[in-house]
Amino acid sequence: MSPEQAVDICRKAIQTILMVSAPMLVIGMVVGLLVSIFQAATQINEQTLSFVPKIVAVFLAMLLFGPWLIKVMTVFTIGLFETMATL
Image (cartoon, rainbow, N blue to C red; front, top):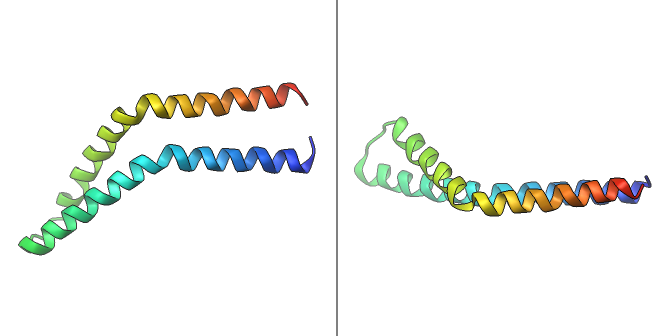
């Protein structure tokens, strides 16, 4: 395996990780921002109020994007095995 191939595999792995994690991170961030605005407007300083909605939103995002996430990871894994077979 040449260094260029190793760098290409690492680049594809990082790209796949970012693609797979992005929907959950963005949704968690948006829900966190909305909860923070709500807390600031009502002056409620409850710590658990910020965590529970984010956890629920991330789990719902995982359910919603689950088939797509599995497809992306499967395509990457198959490509990785095909690359390993040609070495």
